[in-house]
Length: 120
Image 1 (cartoon, rainbow, N blue to C red):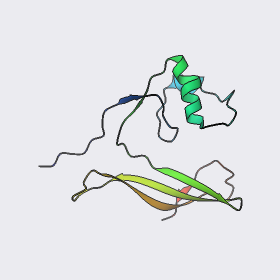
Image 2 (cartoon, helix red, strand yellow):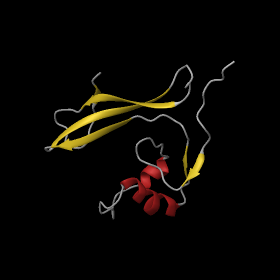
Image 3 (cartoon, one colour):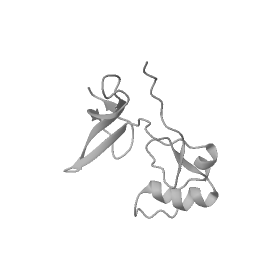
Image 4 (cartoon, rainbow, N blue to C red):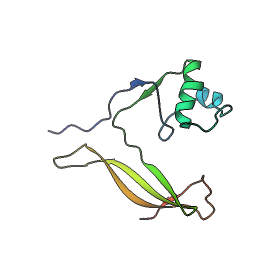
């Protein structure tokens, strides 16, 4: 009998990315970008300059799927791809994490922010 695949436990960490992160209201309310000069990544800056000094504990849940939209700029025009994360549903690799690339249409007015949609 096969057991249902479940994500791992919560593991302490000293960094979390911005893409798939849950925040408490306290974290959101204290987060601003005053002092961030654009060097390095925003998530590292927030972890080390805002959240950890205030005593917020950070953790990750290993093996949880998180899809991301990846944008590349060529000739000042953005093109986007959705990296859709999923677990294999059956067979020899049941439960293994996989990523599938899908076209992702950005709105015509997109200038670096906003919502997009999967096109296939």
